[in-house]
Image (tube, helix red, strand yellow):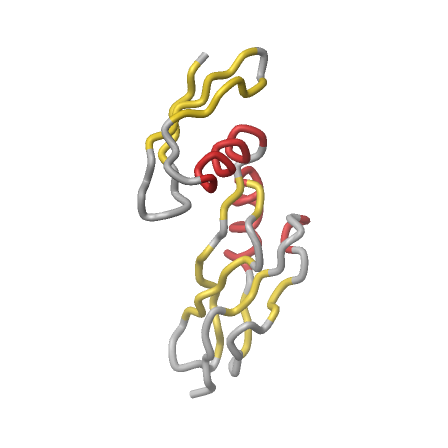
Length: 120
């Protein structure tokens, strides 16, 4: 069986084909750098993503605070993390890189603020 991937690691966006047999990778073709092969091997085993979103913030100059996970998380955890983010409300002031939630949704990643937000 052949699976096709578009690499998202670098701007080259290589179209990579992975030949598989019995859920094992036999060959990887189409990548122009070693990062592409590493990406598709991870994508086959356990796809990982960084999550960027916003959460509500009170008494700030804007109503929403941009946040990001501290590391890539398994793709199947994204909806669990978003459920936490939907109900999360923080209080200004918040500094960039402040940890808002440790080990969010048991993903192994922290949810951190990605900008400073002062009190209004």
